[in-house]
Image 1 (spheres, rainbow, N blue to C red):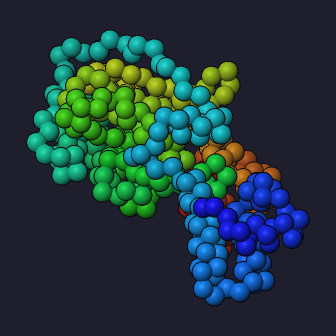
Image 2: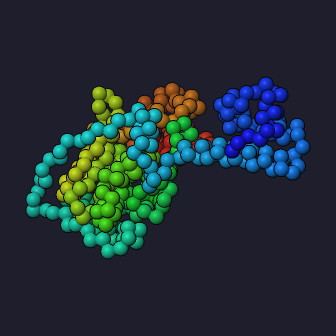
Image 3: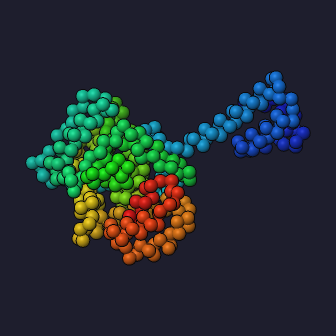
Amino acid sequence: MPLSQEFLQYLADASIPEEEYHSLTPVERSSILKDFRLSTATSGIVGEEIEKAMMSTLEKYEAKKESKTITFSSVSEGQVSTYLASINLLILEGGPLDAEENSTISFLPFEWQDIEERDTPRAINHLQRELQKFGVIFGRGNYQMYDVHSKHTFLNVRDDKTGSLSGGTDLIIAPFGMTSGCVKLNSCVAFEFKTKETVDEQGLESFLSQATMELIASNYHSQQMTLVVLTDLCTNSCVLLTFTRESNKLAILQYSDVTLNQMAIFVHSHLQQNCFTIRNYSLPNVDDNIRESEMVMKEWKRARVSGFTSSLQWEHFQEMMEDAPLGSKERAMVIREHFRNRDLPDTSYLSMFS
């Protein structure tokens, strides 16, 4: 809003050029406005004008702070690019997947009968039946599907440095028997559903930005490497998002135009090679790929937490963990003792070291 003549005169008397005033931060401008109000009659029109000016400045400042939060469902491609650059992540296009291994097994398309919100439970039941045909085992000692589509803040991440993340996903595949608080700490696969009608109108690629942020947030929380699947469950145009190493740097690997059969095969392979249940993680011959993928994610998450190493005496903690193998009771005791009575803002930090 334009400045009043009284306020311009105040700036001139204080030797503050108008251009310099506009270049100040919102907090600095608010301070000057407050001083001006105290030095003049604040009743009547002048007082109302200054009050409005101060409120406008403060509202803009608060709006600027609030804008640092990235919401999955409305994030733009430009916002994603800026965010990925801030955390040094690239997106690489994955090559064509192998041909479907067994032509006798086919993933049956799902028929949407309602809007996504109301039909998601049916879609989840259908997906479980189809994945079982491709070898994914559900039940005690294996995996379970967790319907989280109504939890719109399920994957929220607080990060004042690069911007907080806000949103959720539709379905999580995680080890069987997880409590609600442990699901995101052990997520293996996250599914983002879109109805066929939505895909026909907007195209699946228009939701890639949303799926990318779900990949970032889900892997921030989980101690396992989480795969994200973007699909309508009825056309052969799925998108898969995961992490990989390129020139010894972490990068996002994106597979586009994936068929439903290829998606099911990929999910099964991912769960076998990169994830663990409570049962298979305790086995002495656990696949080295599992430990490698786990450490990749923990390395990245530790680097994302500013001031983390010094505040938690990381070097001393690292020495204590050297003799405590991953997944062992000794490791659990070390972690529990070290984090006891610490005021941590996010319990997922514990999963970085378990």
